Length: 257
Image (cartoon, rainbow, N blue to C red; front, top):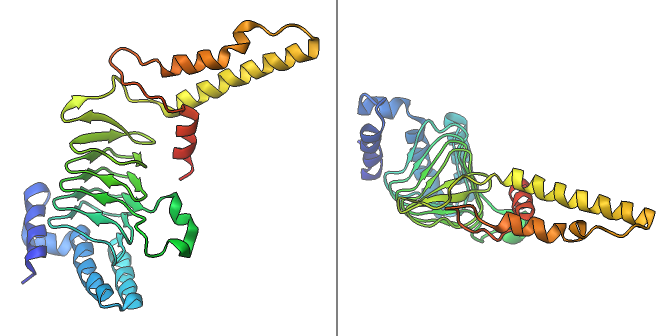
């Protein structure tokens, strides 16, 4: 009845989703299946250079399923979108085989796409390897590679390449497990580190202003506060990996998305 590609997806739903009671139920009631089936049609029209018609078919699929897949995106075999409401997959995204995506996931363009029409035709969206799992509400942005069998935790924002067989957590995303081994002793709190760094610098600057107004010599501790703060933040705790990036810079780059 269906193409081998869609038959594989139905079989995969039956295998991985305990809520699926029959193949007929998957065909009738699963928006993830509907979205991929509609994308197969819109992608074929897109490749025939009927771009507006392809986008219109894709738009109808979005209205029907709540899932937006650009007809220019490339989807691998046995690609599963579970529930799916709010999923967005951009034009130049490439998804490998056996990937699993939950609702609210965005595979979007990075900051470089703000150039508008100048970036048309360039690779702007992520590439997912085989066996990648992306949790609810996660955002993966830019022309980056998420390698095979990686897992992106729910709510994470990924802006850099992700190595194979790893688990990414946080905003911005950090690798906490790789090849089954823990990378960091704790999940980094980038917001807290950024706020601490800014507070320490503000305290030091206030002391400098007071010293300049009163003519008193500046305390040596205040002069060295910036270096001390940097050394403390860069000294890893027991079992933690060293990260030389500035927490304020990391936080600001991850916040303006």
